[in-house]
Length: 362
Ligand SMILES: *Cc1c(COP(=O)(O)O)cnc(C)c1O
Image 1: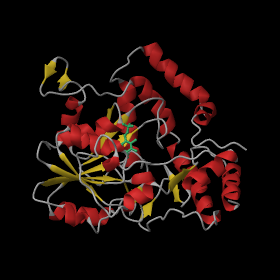
Image 2: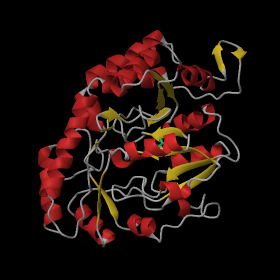
Image 3: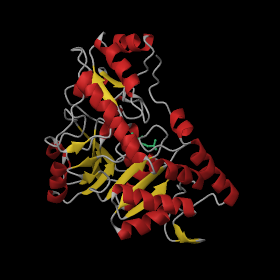
């Protein structure tokens, strides 16, 4: 059996007729930027998340960049973020001229709320929390810091579409929630895309301008904005996908639960799920000591795996001379042990069984 790490073709094959219809409709109308498809998708996404407003943009990175910008954060302001994240989270901070401050991760791979207070200074203005791998960070503890220190809160939900904490969805806790529709994400499109959710009308109106050259009325430019808009074609295709997103999440949960129940090789450490969090399993990350041997063994048996992420951001070429971060090597050690097992929208139980059987005989 051959198991791809993610299998995007299945989604298209399964809903081919609907995708082709949606695509053809946009081409026939030939209205390609900021039309009905984008605004309809924004409404549908708000209902899915439970936010008042959604503003679609070009990518998850742009969602973060605009969120920091719209809150007025600028040079000299410090923003806390987890050290264990994808590089986009920190790039968005740097692009706004703010200072990123890395906080260690806990055993759930998310920001360690017990250590947060050590990193708060009188220059700290905001926290960007990342719900990594699809599991919400400990939002009750984070909200306490946010209130106590009067901080802004931005959620990086690029991996957590549909995930919740104490029954409240990620993307509704912070001032702003940032999503990515990059193809491999749980709600992935057919190219780049992103969105920002918020309950604040003021921020919403400002974001509409920021994404569109600082303008909400054609040729009236109120602020210095960006060009970061979701295409009508992407929105039309995402509307097809969001109509069955609950089934996709359900399937990912079924696969993950099976992995947790049936993988029983002591060389493989399974992920932990926090009691108050409902995980959506964007990634299923295990740890093992001899990672290269393990990955080669799986690949020899037809099973692809991934690593998220092999180089911690503070050791990346871009940041290693710019940022001080020490957690006694914990993250460095982790980055040598983590392996992401295959899990995808329409993976079958039979395929999961094959992965389990192969891992158990490693
Ligand atoms: C994917 C991702 C992003 C960036 O999204 P893009 O759409 O690729 O720009 C940001 N943060 C995290 C945690 C991500 O996984």
